[in-house]
Amino acid sequence: MQKSILGLFLFCLLLLSSCGVYTHSGASVPPDAKTFSVAFIQNTASIVAPTLSQTLTEKLKQKFINETSLKLTQEDGDFAFSGKITDYKVAPAAVQGNQANAVTRLTVSIEITFESNKDETKNFKEVFSRNVDFDASLSLASEEPRLITEVTAMLVQDVFNKAFINW
Image 1: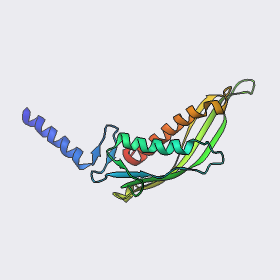
Image 2: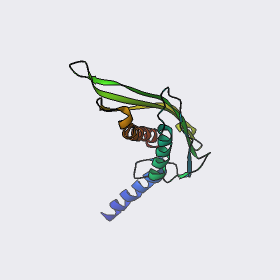
Image 3: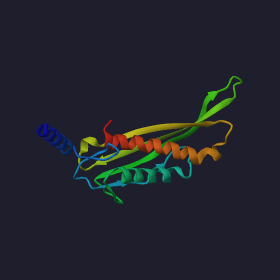
Image 4: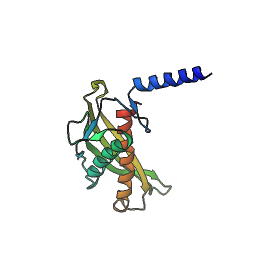
């Protein structure tokens, strides 16, 4: 019985060590990767929310710091992220019976480039888009800080999943 448990344990250990380093988030990071860099995410959308670029850039950095063993470097990391905000729009999402808008939707789209100097097959350039709804009776100005927090959290999770979870 103890030999079979030991054998199973060794098999699992071998399996984990052959696929890279795993973190509590499920991220798969090659053991020889040590650093990452995130270039400032420029806002090229036709509507510019003043805090969006900074918030998105900082959340990307924090996500990788908190959920991987990688260290942040200013540039030329083993993994490099860059990109831009391509769209920021507000539109009606639901209309009431009297043709009045009941729900408004904020949509944010970003284009992210991921470059790995450890495995070029993992490189990508992809557009990620997310939206959040808010009560149409509220103004965008009053809701914008909360909406930006919510939508950037979703976008950052999408980028993280694409880069390190291999969905």
